Length: 478
Ligand code: GLN
Image (cartoon, rainbow, N blue to C red; front, side):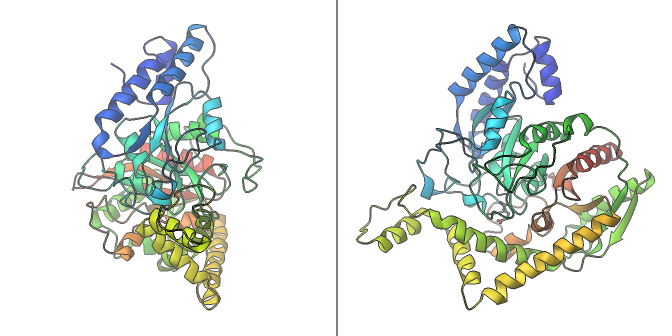
């Protein structure tokens, strides 16, 4: 019977003939179909995946060397373009839309031998923290289906959690990879802004968005990052910095032992006491293992969520103006007697509640009368945060934080209260505001029977240190 642990083990098993890519694909397709009630997938490309698997098996039989991601079964959040396949951002406005090109990450995955198994449910246009905002219904947490999986990349997290695929790619604008990884008990990595090309990623807030990786292990996340990172002629915001061999070094001991944590974060009234106690214990163990772990004051913590929501809604209101029912997407069958009516009808019918709320909020903060009071102010705070982070990383190699203040909450619990929902992002948005890499690793178990993670952040483009520290902290925790 096929079993998946790590890509490395899988590759050993492929090479020794203990398994085949076809067997792997069949296993994951069965699991995904069996778990259909969780609503993690919008479409599964079963036949195509099996065809691709057969070819990859033939290459092995012919004695060719394995590709770096040979036969690795991957799912894509429904915001990542895959040529000639549906792409909807879980929105009615893009229902029936098919992408006419591949995202750079998809090209790179396929060139490395990966198989795209399907398209995964998410919050509409990646806006949400619980995956209750999809036009195609909520995603349920596989550990407890009465609870949310987190969002916005909830389907991608559940698919890895429940062994429907080996790896998922999601997007992280304010925590949408790390937060669902935390709620689902898996690894979620958001790289530095500019590490991975955003070409072919549906834009939410372009100065925040990054593609991120869900995996069962840090080693697998490192390998996938190594493949999909790096310069791209189609995205000028990608860094030209060379891509290190993350997979080769992720396991090596790190010399980066100066660690900070934010005092205000661990003392925040919204933090579940069990989460605080677990992280306190990890800090104590790290000190015993020879790390310096200092409490650092971060008095801007309560500003990060408002700043994030002013800036991201402003960017979203501009990015989403392209969905007008003219070039593509939903066209209303109502009475479109002039162009304004056509736009209005398409957008009123096509967008869901949360997306509309954010477009209106973003339009408001950009309006002439309020621009300085909201948008300019938020930009100034973002600048202060960036300057502060530069100082911080002069003295420290990494920052430890909870990923989310609570474990997975019940479906419906936060939907009536936007502020409560937004506060779920209090520990994650900082990394996107300042552009640094961050990861959530699944270390802990709550007495409610739910997993939760530890979040680690490093200086820009210090993904190697981030991965090494993750491995080291997992060992200390064992
Ligand atoms: N929960 C945050 C939001 O709704 C983060 C979303 C994301 O990272 N895509 O904006």
